[in-house]
Image (cartoon, rainbow, N blue to C red; front, side):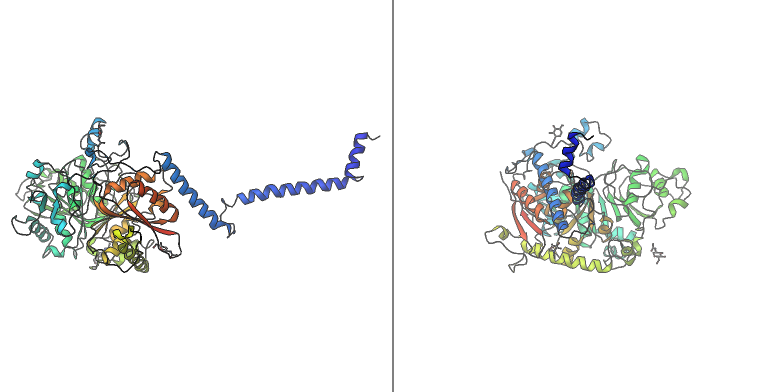
Length: 621
Ligand SMILES: *[C@@H]1O[C@H](CO)[C@@H](O)[C@H](O)[C@H]1NC(C)=O
Ligand SMILES: *[C@@H]1O[C@H](CO)[C@@H](O)[C@H](O)[C@H]1NC(C)=O
Ligand SMILES: *[C@@H]1O[C@H](CO)[C@@H](O)[C@H](O)[C@H]1NC(C)=O
């Protein structure tokens, strides 16, 4: 007997149960399609290879926009209100260099020279403000006049430091009441630098110092460069010389060298490696540079060995550096000074000695280290090619590098030798080089035509407009904040602009720095979430191609970066940023907040690339 309930059911579903079952199946299938359908449309982001051409580019744009929004949100969240203009810092911060607060480092217990090291981790950010210029600040004279005469109000130096500046590389004199002269041409001061340079050339067996370049010496690291006079002379011989010295609150060698338009940055290696890859320099030079080379079991020498290219030279001039026990030729093992023992251990040979100057040459033979019986210095495990302020290591680096090419094996032209090109083949072929240069020459032509206050008028210039161009020596100290292969540097040289370029390779970008250095350019690794190791007002132009996009994925804010750029840039200095439309719009808002004049330029080549051209005003109050 059927229950009345069941009867009702059969009325609804009809007399034949299989049909209702089929219907149920159909509904379930529909539901399943809906579920899988929606999840498969979600899965487009995780499976971008799915061929959906109309959706994908949109999706990518959205994703980029989201990254920019996130960047912006983070910047706002970290304290900047979008409209506010920042005020000037107090007078005490006129020469402010973040990460080098010696007082604070001492309080925190750093000692034995480490208090002068870079300690960004302890420097509190404090209030955001713009570093002001000293009361008597004047725009520097143009190169090359500015190399020999600077405004005394632009730098910080005490009267005592001034009066004690008697040594060869620190010799200066006061002209008028507000100018300092170096190296005066009128012969009032005996010019020791030229003779010194000639002496070094002779010690290397060269006819004159104009032969350095042919002998393979192109880049020089000058440690504790005085006020840069040796570097200034080498620049005239086509050698790139980078001055490094520890942070100094007054009378800074780095600040003075940069003010003269000579390459310099704050750098010391008391406890940590310098931010350059191994096998970078052809010569390291130290004249009374204050480093006790045989301290710390020779670690300082090992750091220099790391930086020197095979066959490179270490030039030491110091009245106290006598590596031999006495002037007699009698040498006994136990009479060797520590310095001589160390240099022997790391396969350097003393090739010349004259007066107080000693020249060692690094071996060209990578096997030397393992075959040298006196050598108890181990080889490092490799993989050390991007050292960003790592601890000094008591081992030898670079011996297994493909870049182990003696400097004497270079071709005499300034291009990369075929051996060097081969090493960098994964980055660059000969054709790539040529193409890259053409691209950058065009970019430079555009930039150069835009570097005029006209650009901020109501009828702005367009790139390449036929107005008179700025003079070739308008800029001197240029920083390329994201240098790639050093293309801008190459284009500037090709176009005979009177600049030198600090090529910065960001730590999280592709590490192209070895290539940049092998081209004979200067360069450094840097994390743009941290301040750059330089004094305020030391660069005439900052350039960054694609840096903002690169930084959108980092943990740091854009506003900090702009305030740091403002610190580095001299008044009336220029900024050229090249990037995607989204970040450029954001950058423009920031530029306004730090009171730069700014204009977005559309290159009108059909891409969403834009230029942001800015000038820092000369604020008096
Ligand atoms: C350096 O640190 C000291 C002690 O912490 C502090 O008083 C001083 O303001 C700091 N200087 C700068 C320029 O930040
Ligand atoms: C450098 O040149 C010398 C002499 O021409 C040659 O014997 C040597 O193999 C070269 N070394 C390298 C690393 O190319
Ligand atoms: C437009 O110019 C920019 C900047 O020079 C360049 O990066 C980009 O590739 C160009 N785009 C096209 C489509 O040519």
